Image (cartoon, rainbow, N blue to C red; front, side):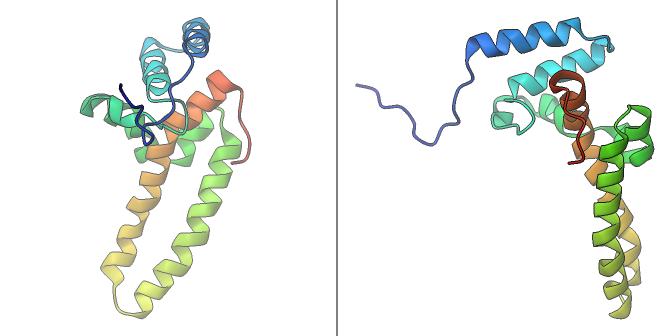
Length: 143
């Protein structure tokens, strides 16, 4: 007798995965985006429950966007995700300004200056997922 692993993530239904593949293939985006979207489906969708099933290079492709890192909210605006751009920008400002002032008060100016990279990383790790949600799931909400 074999027991099912109770800690394993739930398996997606095959028919749902085939439907998502057809939706992705019908999109009017570049082939690079289609490959990224297929990897996101393989990883289990926007929440990425099966991310460990991907290879290291595939995980990096799914979870980091270099243009999102370099251009942040402007990249989101170029992709038509202005609501997400405003939301993430406001959230980053709400966290970074008080944290930066606190660090400068304690004399950690160099660390306070480096916080901008953290904000850029937020945009970099969310860009592919948010664009997938916009293009495939028609979700372009505020958060």
